[in-house]
Length: 358
Image 1 (cartoon, one colour):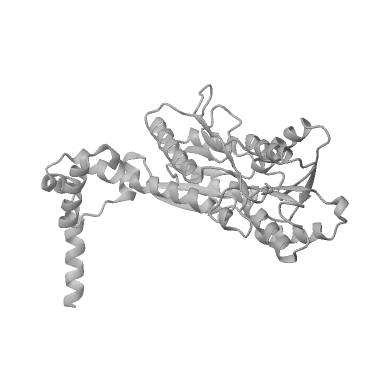
Image 2 (cartoon, one colour):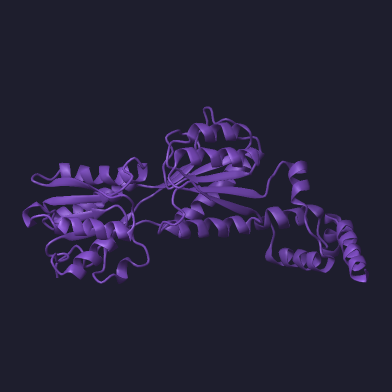
């Protein structure tokens, strides 16, 4: 019973501690304490340390539910991605989380598993929860849903995909340029039959890579491109694709492969080298996409198109907080007639041994 009484006394004591108590002990204003929890970037390091010491001394616990009711600001950000297990998603998500954490807020992640219906279900869930903002790397076109959410005060940014509406903020990569870089490189190596290996051609990011490659092929007389569909963009799918190509007559095989991501390319290289029938790059040159950590350490180092994953994640989060501030200030409503920032990164080609004969 004595322990219960002590716990009850502690709870009572915590409930009596207010922001004003923390401000008085830290010798700052109540507004500075509020900024410490919600907008720490506005405070100096010395001020943050004084407030942290006062919070620890008093055992102050902020009431986020009460704050949301009072200020209309929910400390939660929603993040929806179409492949959380993808090779690039963890790095992007980590950069977003770091930035969200620096704001004293929290990120909830959702995986739509490539389903447009699931994607919309998560958007509806986040709307019901009245999160402050949503970051989404979409499968389908969700801009109408995001516009409706903005009308109710929920900011949004498209990630890794350029918005179609000027009213929708986005941070993307120029995948058309990336696909063109890959195909032009293979053409420069004298390759005439390029295979494009990918799944989900309806996914805009993948379709853009293909369209970029096609633009390079159409400008090169005597060069053709063949689409080689696979069920998923994984190492295993790359291995299966390579096995299928190995069973073709040599005169019917592509002499180059542009894989929609590095995982596929790594699988292809692994299978070709293990079978010791098709030589890389002498028989088939290979280019991947993304420049993931393992691209340079494959048995034949992989030529690939580098995309800035961490930089994209940081830019997405920065832009979302700009959008939240604009909504809070009343500067953005349903987006009608208002242009929002649309940031686009440029990819770069990284040439390694998989595409260039020594």
